[in-house]
Length: 421
Image (tube, rainbow, N blue to C red; front, side, top):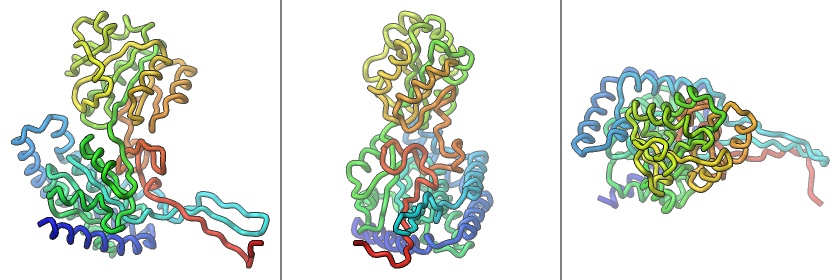
């Protein structure tokens, strides 16, 4: 079976490479026609998608999957409409391919331009979120890339039903049907072949999932990887924070969707205002159904807080659990974040602009925020239409990976017969 899967994967790689050449030359109009057809097909196919999703959900429940995992897996009418809407938002984005990023003229008369070009073929490996099928396929297409998708076994039926809508959209727009492909097996050996690069067919990999998946991809991949290992996001409540604003932001950042990578995991509170702010924040979190753990100072202020240990500061709960640490002002918050951050998203709540600027300048995460919930760490919320993932590295892509981040560039040099001495 492994050899059979290997041949399937390597054939997909060759087909994707051929499709990538056509996509690199495809017009913005043609790609937008495909995206619009895909959105329409997802809406028309909603019943089949929901039936497929129900298969996945029932299987997940039998396997005693966590509530946060189920939240990422479950589709409903609203989420299907959101998926289709995301594709239509991508249509509105400017086509990055061919964009002139910079241009200049040299004293010898050479005209030089830096121009955006597609990356080529992208491999996307993801777990429970079936909507990634649509987001990743659409973003790669808009940026002129072919993509090979590998969804998790837990969302297999949902992802394949969504993929059928994407493939139909490609055909309706007269674009190569192999522009978007999904691996037709849940066999784990398929991931290994994809990580190998499929005989140089894959240009970059994007993992979306838990630590185990991302760690494997980063350790074993033979091609560049965009991704983040964990999302240990922090929210710092400064002494000059508006308490009502702080409570609202904290509850949203933790409890809106606790299972996403942009959910806050550690709440930092300035020791100057802790005796006033902590009880309100603690009560609000517990009323929202959140388990609260805290340092010794936190427990001394509110004795119903569960004592934390050092492992809490480096734990991505992805659940209705939060850890609280009392710190010495913004510098104490920065010190804690620099020690435990995974460089994903960190936010400060304060009415003091100077303090906010110190935080925004000194925290070196992919996304830093002031007076805003960390749950805005999302390409759609950034106006990118959607995202293929969040990257926390410092090379090429960082933060939400949208259409621009799915391109590279080349230099176009025009001369009039110049030779170099």
